[in-house]
Structure formats: structure tokens, C-alpha cells
Length: 189
Ligand SMILES: Cc1cc2nc3c(=O)[nH]c(=O)nc-3n(C[C@H](O)[C@H](O)[C@H](O)COP(=O)(O)O)c2cc1C
Image (cartoon, rainbow, N blue to C red):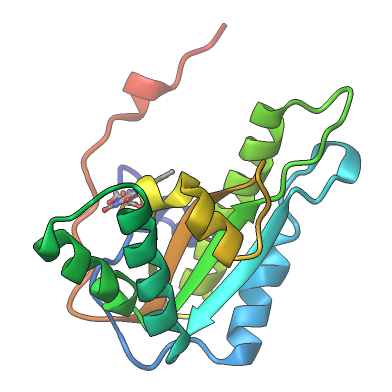
């Protein structure tokens, strides 16, 4: 950070980092609702609302693990270590919010725009988690576009998971911000 921030909103935006180590307690239903409300305010061309926020918590995380494992089997994976590991993937945080792209055919709004909107929604969810004191990390991987996984989460053939947002209480200190120079990314036309 080159400039100290005194505006808490700007601090949230300019100093956010992901947290991979996440513990109990997870966000309450009210806190989750606030995150989803933030997601629903993402920019959205033609008001298509091309998203769904699917909350996975408690024992349902184990059920999601079985869905992930089944998706590997359907893709022909037989490696027992990989299959075993898939069961534990959703246990890495108390709450997962899967942000699904619910693609809608539209003459002016192409899929890339809808992906952008759903990605903005996912980021808003993560910022609202941070604003309420929780840590989060956005993950995808091959499961995100796997039809078995997408269908289990309520999506259709044209949908995909834009992000699995793992959310919980931050365990350990936040990582140090990477040093980036504004000049490397800011230009004027
Ligand atoms: C679309 C997308 C997919 C991602 N998928 C993964 C993932 O599957 N696994 C992972 O460890 N990080 C993934 N990340 C990166 C992390 O969310 C995070 O941004 C990265 O670790 C850098 O940390 P930072 O957000 O604190 O800069 C993904 C990020 C985006 C935007």
C-alpha cells in the first residue's frame, strides 16, 4: 500500500486478501443473507440476474463431498487417493457459497457479459464477508464446470459454478499484501 487509507470502505477494497485457513464459527444466516444481498447488487446488463447463490453448510458439506467424488468417478477417475481427497474438499470452511452462473439467452447480452456479472456478484459476496469480519477464498477447479456438480447444485446444462466461495472465521494472521506498483497497471489514453 503506497498511501495510508483512512476511509474504511476504501481500506476494505484496497487491502482485502483471501484466507485459505478458515474455521468455525461460520457466518450466521443473517450474515449470509447480507452477503447474498451484496451479490445481488452486482452490475447486470438487461437485469438478467444471471446468478444463483447456493449455500452449503453443516452436514450438507459432506453430501457435497460425495457429489464431488461421484463427479470424479463419472469422469473415469479411479485413483483412490484423489477420490478420498474429494470427500474432504468441502470441509475446508464452515460455509461454502457456490455462485452459479444461470445463463439466460439474450440477443444483446452474450455469455461473457453474464459471466462477468456473476463474477462481480461472487466478488461482492466475498467483500461482504470481509466487511462482516469473515475471511473467504474463491476456488473453482474442474468441479466448477462439471455437469454432475452443477446439476446437484441446481444448475442446468448451460450453467457453471463461477466460484466456490469458502467462508469462515480467519485462522491465523492475514497474509501480507503483495507489493504491486500502481504505475504498472494504471495508464492514461
Ligand atoms: C475465477 C477464480 C478462480 C480461482 N480458483 C482458485 C482455486 O481453485 N484454488 C485456489 O487456491 N485459488 C483460486 N483462486 C485464487 C484465490 O481465490 C485467490 O485470489 C488467490 O489465492 C490470491 O489471493 P488474494 O485474493 O489474497 O490475492 C481463484 C480466483 C479466481 C478469481
